[in-house]
Image (cartoon, rainbow, N blue to C red; front, side, top):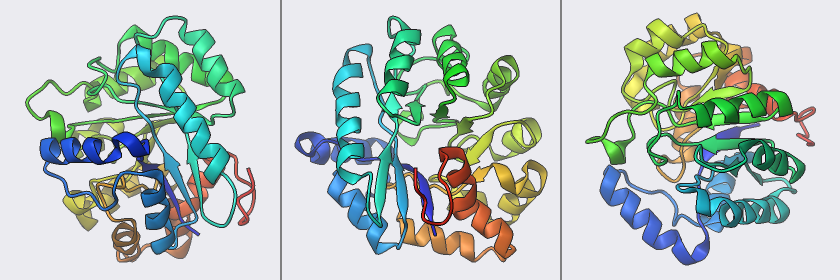
Length: 276
């Protein structure tokens, strides 16, 4: 079984343009056409059982439209052998964060995605703090982009390890996920400051750059229970990333934890038939 905890898809009418813009800004090569159908096909091709789709609300006005799209994904792709489960999205400048988080919970979302760079807000902003506090109260997952965003290399890094640590210590939410192995391009600081903290790392986008040796070193300090397999699809090929994890010579127990068991526990999925 495989769960990809970090994927992306866009509404059909904007998918092509969005993918083209992001590819140009980041220099990354997309492996799908950016649509939900494209993501589904990638999951099937890689024999992955479930993908978690992570929408980003880039300004507060998008809250309703993006979460309608995300809910539609859950309604259409939330059952069957291969599934996509979408989180909701929220912006730290949204009015009534408490009310919006309750709405997302009542709408069936298991978690939310935030992106400090796209949302032009540092992770220790009071809006993010309140989102995390609400998520803790509502038992919801929060996934944040962490480290350098390849499309924003000329801008301040809004979720570096130092600020992530500040937020972890301030809020103490056990369902907080730092994408990109704790912080893209911050491997050493992640190891020094964040490994061993009560936070999840997902493996999205960075496995090739991190490398086997550093991955295993960080794994040993952080613990296998707090690492989630993820790809950032369409920006990485799901099958290739699964093969990379399986090439690391991990024990069967550790490999299973990373590829699906940790995610299943976090999502509240029961058993190998992954029923929500």
